[in-house]
Amino acid sequence: MKALFIGGTGTISMAISRLYLLKGHELYLLNRGSRNDELPEGAVSLIGDINDEEKVLELIEGMHFDVVCEFIGFTPDQVERDFRLFSGRTDQYIYISSAAAYQKPVANYMINEGTTLANPFWQYARDKIECEKVLLRHFREDGFPVTIVRPSHTYDERRLPLDVEGRKGSWQVIDRMLKGKPVLINGDGTTLWTVTFNRDFAKGFVGLMGNVRAIGEAVQITNDESLTWNEIYQATANALGVPFRPYYVTTDFLVETGDPGLFEGLWGDKSNTVVFDNSKIKRLVPGFVPDINWSEGVRIALDYIMSHPECQVPDPEFDEYCDRVIEALETAKKLVRS
Image 1 (cartoon, rainbow, N blue to C red):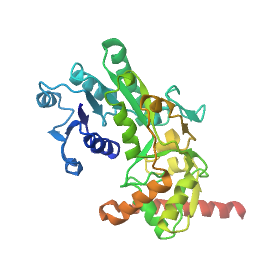
Image 2 (cartoon, rainbow, N blue to C red):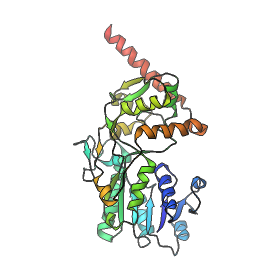
Image 3 (spheres, rainbow, N blue to C red):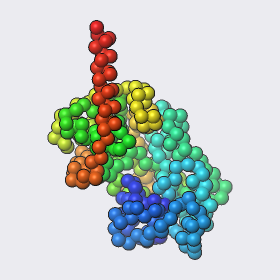
Image 4 (tube, helix red, strand yellow):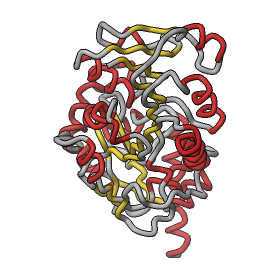
């Protein structure tokens, strides 16, 4: 099987690229080449900007792909561009959407592919919804062979999937834990959430590639394990060998006081209890089982992060923000009690 990945080196796509190559398939990567050296030998690199349509057409001239996978398409104009580029040049086009597109607030905590798509809180999610609409219209009207994949909170060994962190990632939360400082948790920590290791996600995704039953379908791929944020943070503290010191803050307080745009994903995603029904991916890919649970995944990630200094990116602004929030709320408690 011959595939073209647009991107191919991100958190989700890196694991898929590695597994796809391991299975002996032919892989082309269309990207700027900044991380291609991290992939196993065998991928063919097409260096270019996907937005430069003329250049891309030169790179793929005379080529036809069994599958084209779009990992970095975020807006409707970008998937319209892909339709122009790849219509007639691929037997399947797989688009990475997002489980954030599902209706928020949730009408039912159990989520499947038939759940309504609507998210007034997060522009990222609304754009993904519009991308899906564009692609499904081209499927219906033009026969464009699209498959839509909706991941939820997918992570790899380089970054922990936490709910309240700064723009530079999860290290500052880890650092606060190591120093015995409280860590901010959205709400009361009892919201159910699902985190999926990228290697598990890749197994389901590769099973959809070249799968004729997946054409015209939307499919979610997540872990089967649902955890509260308290359990996610507690397991992190356990893996670090430190006490768990949560400090609970309401969603609206975080959104109103935080860096503009940083916590949009709380209202639009992480503050909602969701449990994913993975029946469809298991029907389409028999034998798919996500087998890296959080207690194992957090240790894999922390082992890597603690042994790779480049993953330990300080975020003093976020650290100071956490301290200010805690101080302000403790002061308010004292004023109310007095």
